[in-house]
Every structure is written in C-alpha cells, then in structure tokens.
Length: 278
Image (cartoon, rainbow, N blue to C red):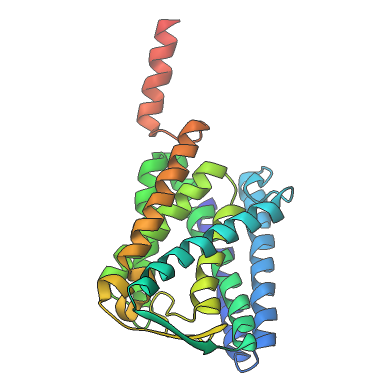
C-alpha cells in the first residue's frame, strides 16, 4: 500500500498544479510561480507520505547538498541537450533567426520545474526505488524506463519511436543517475536542465508537445532520424546516443560505489553461500 499512497499524493499534487497552470497560462510570470509552487509542494508531499508509510528519514531528498546536486544535474542536462543541438546545427537542420522572448522562457521555467519534479518523484522516487528493492537495479531500470516511455504516448504529436527513444534515453539515464547518487535531486536537475534547454532556450518541440517560444527564435527541419521529426529532438538518434553514453557512465559509477542492487533471489543465494562457507 505504500506504493499506492505515495503515487496518489504525488499525482494529486501534479494534477492540481497542472490545472492551476492551465488556468493562468496567459500570464507567464504567474505560470512560473504556479509551476515552482507545484514543485515545492510535490517535494513536501513526497517527504510527508514517505515518512508516514515507511517510517524513515527521506534520505533521497535530504536538504544538505540539495542545491549543489540540483545545480550540477541542471548543468549536465543543458550540456547534453546542447550537444544534440550542436550536432543537428552542424548538419544545417537547426537555424537561429534571432532572439525569442524572455516572458516565454519564464513561463516555461515554471512549467518545466513542475514537470521535472513531479515526474522524477513518481518514476524514480516511488516506482524505481520500490521496484528496485524487489527486483534489483537492472530489472527496475528496464521496467520504469518502459513505463516512462509509454507515458509520453499521450502527448499531442507522440510517435512510437519517440516513446521508445524516451524510454531508452531518459528512462534509463535518469534511473541510472539516481542509482549512482541515491539522491533524487540529481535526476530532478538533469530532467529540468534538459527540458528547459529544449523549450526555454532553443525553442524546440519537447516530447511532442508543440513548439514553444523560448530565448531563441529558431526553426528545425530535416530527416526525422536526425531532428526527431514532430516529436522533437528527443526523437533524434543524437539524443539517444548522448543519453546512452551518460547512462553507461552513471551505471559505472553506481557499480564502483557499490550501489547496484542485485536481484532478490541472487542476493539470497549469495547470503546462503556465505553462511555455508562460514
């Protein structure tokens, strides 16, 4: 039941925040405020329900070092998406025509903050963490990655390939980031940095949700395998490549730090063998 209660709390806050943002979307400054408030309330709600259902300190959202972890996760997310755009630009499929609008980027800041926090709490904080305890890191990473990809099929311009790409690049990378650090702040920052760079800076389609107006006035056109087509650059092979590389690095760090959780049966066999040897 802890999984059910935790999901209910975070989903309820996410839905209320989404409705609030939709009601004030005409004003980007208020939209930003509603988005940030939703993110804060989601963190507080997650902490409260985890303490109530698991009777433990919520170490994955520890206050100490939170700013640093969010910061370097955000920088990494922006850098990864920037690398994708740089390669697409090099091939001539992304063109900047001038500056966009600051208010547009401000509104997207709040929207992306709310989305990054609520989605990470749901998929990595609740689903991945609890499934990992039962099945081990590898199975949890695959299962939650698939669920994360499937959740993007409901977007307006979603494609099957886009969902597969999200499952591989984001579902895998963000779960691996949590496994390596055992902190939700890092995948939250990484998720936010990637999304805000996509919509708020480079003004590209984000996961098939239309083309927003961010800091740059730009257009993208070209072969779908390179640009991602209607789904946006997250459907680009470059995005898959760079995120898979980041996933490998995170998993290597998790292994080096001894943070990979084995399958329960395998763990029991190891314990039994050790006991017999003693």
